[in-house]
Image (cartoon, rainbow, N blue to C red; front, side, top):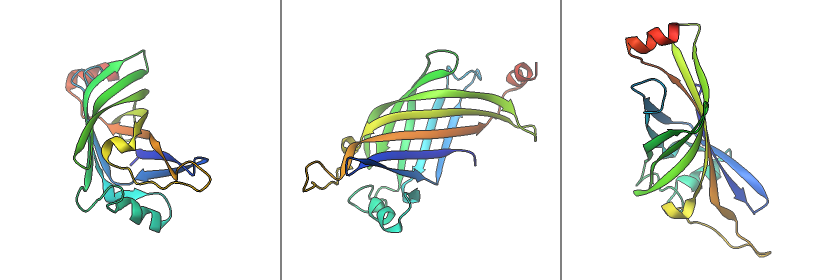
Length: 177
């Protein structure tokens, strides 16, 4: 409920279009609770893409871009989660879009862990990174009369992930101490 998955792409090479996916699930498993051993799995429903204008969203789910009818989901499966310092991690993994799987690397900033007013333990991360959309077959574009292209190849990924912890008793005791 308090998570979001966004992307930004340069349009006409002068401005950014921001979009998001409204339907996605993320599971983070960290046996020690300190995230240094975490595995992350995310599944995104492609048809939930939203950029504002309905016509643009319809184009994005078409065969020109995501081809949501044939490839309804994108998936991310981590291969590493490495602590850089107290609050910064590098999240590495394999991203699958349109049955093409390629490695990606994201910066993950740890926001902290707290107990909410209902007694749930919450942790949060802010994620950021870049991919080249052509690497996954998202290559639709058009040349501009004035030079350049309609859409940048680079896509910036931004995510805010707030998780509700299901933790082992020994981790609960540490958090309560």
